Length: 220
Image 1 (cartoon, one colour):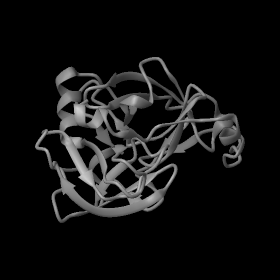
Image 2 (image 1 turned 180 degrees about the horizontal axis):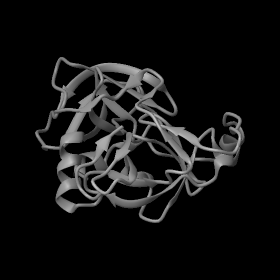
Image 3 (image 1 turned 90 degrees about the horizontal axis):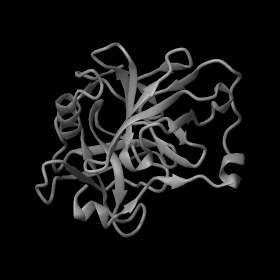
């Protein structure tokens, strides 16, 4: 993670007991519907958002979220589908680029490419000013704003003017139906200061270089 991003307010939230009790009623035991924009609970403590879900080169069902949401071995529950039980676990977390890989249990998850107001049809190149970027997070749902681009030329960051707050970490950032990044942090004040995240270009390059997901992750 850059020094700049380290100084920002991360938007992953610890889940208090009161917040857990206030969640939507759990679905009947079976399978949880999960896609980019779905809320997840990590080790019954942290609430974040799935960036995207798909299959890797080895045919495993995997997904992405923000790296500060968890570490390898952490258990994942689907928010709103807690009765399904554990639906996945973190298998890799990169704290430099602030993304993580989750391996999902195919017997407990129905993967989808649309959640709320966001549809993911492809992974694309980073957004640039004056593109309009949108995200769907488990806390603030669908919000949009102008994309400022990689304003400090880091090669990995995407700045936007979207509203994000705690729990939106990992939310997919799209231009149209093209996935261009994930939400990681905001500057100064939630929903007022700009949002900053990691580009999908940099994540995909790192995934394939490390062969973390059997290479060549493809969103559903």
